[in-house]
Image: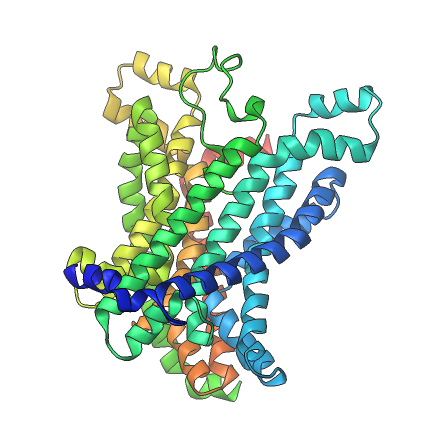
Length: 246
Length: 214
């Protein structure tokens, strides 16, 4: 335990291009780029599927099947097959990013689709009755109501990406995983454990940021923070952020 | 394909180890999650800390948890016990909420009937609440089983042998065959877990089938 603290507090590990801040930044850049691409693809698609009800079968099965594929194997096969076709850093970066995006799409898609599908039908009917067009119903009623589940999908997708970006260091990627992998190859346990502690802290911090953003982005009427609807219901409301997407 | 036929027995041994490393934590995790889920359900004050606390454990990346395990429980880095304990933690993290939700889905009138018939709390839990919660718990168990099979393979990076070893081997030698065999074996193993859980659930919830026919 003391070795880890010594390693973490050593000033030599806090500077340079293989120092903790640089590795942390790499990890955050890979993860955000992957989640951003996945969100741009999956959220509109999920909203469309939830709104129209088309392609539901595909999403449910895709999300289930994707969970069974081991990401480590997928990562290695992607680097082996795509790596030789690319040059320089891209040989590792592109296949790793593709795997991270593929990993993040199913949970985000499932969150967006389930969020829209679970919107109270009477709210939807009311919006139609007020003369809203389908696109207005989607953006002004269904999207705000679906936000808790969209967030929980984004959250679990992001956590998977942060975890897998760690593994991706074995396939030549930078990021915090480097401390774990480099430490392992020279049997430097303090470095490995220090890196592992950093990754765990990063994951918890990312989760916390999501919880805070969600708290302020989601309408208070949906989170149970308003007192009006709670009066007759016993017990605390389940935290929607921790709900696994359907 | 030739690679697979030549290394069949090796793949089989690794599959056996994988089965052990993913399966034992599944059983242990369920045994630990049942009382925790029951506590979360029974005492309103315990619900948020138990559900959020165990949920947070799941956010810790697996490779980090495998490496930190020796520091936490005082084992050696290559000890398979690290993987079993880490996977048990993940299973508990997923299942506490499921057990609490499953117990919560039991109709209150059913619980009141059992109490009125003179069942004490323990007997009511084991003969009424838990059996009725089986479908919900089984659904969570299926998710946990499939994730376990996938996560265990990461332990190959720190050198604990199982199907993930095929990934690291193939990658090191720039050879796709073992990786493909490993992925297929993992998916099949996940499918096997899934089928076993579905089978057991059907066996112990006969009323569900009758309900569907009628």
